[in-house]
Length: 184
Image 1 (tube, rainbow, N blue to C red):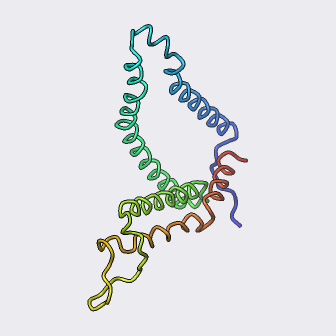
Image 2: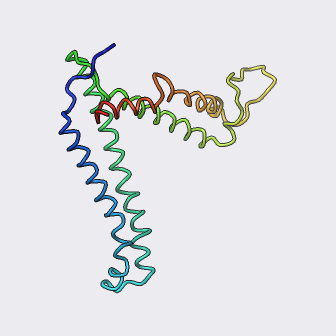
């Protein structure tokens, strides 16, 4: 049995990190709620009609988060995964035990793999329904249903459902992460 990973943050630092994340979450919640809380005052102060105020809180908010939030999240997600891989490789090169990073990569990787196969299934639509793992060859008595790329999409989708169970289910991996990071 391997020993606990070395280099874990101290209990004080973990409490500090948890407090910082809680503070960021509270300010995020306030930021999202402030417009509705102060709606009447904003309408009166800026002399806005109901339509203009609705546009400010609805369409403008959605457009901003669509065109700004999603690209920033994609860049951040790519960077986090790459730096996590570097941390694991650095720990292994130094002869240390790896920490919760491996569990994080396992859960994130399986979620991405399942999302991609689900997207492929949705994109092929009804053509993905027939489950025929064999590839039609010349002389066969049947013709494939739909385009050639759709053959096997359902098989790939159903096959990736099990990926979240390999090497411990994602729920077990999340428990490992919380135990190692928060010291629970």
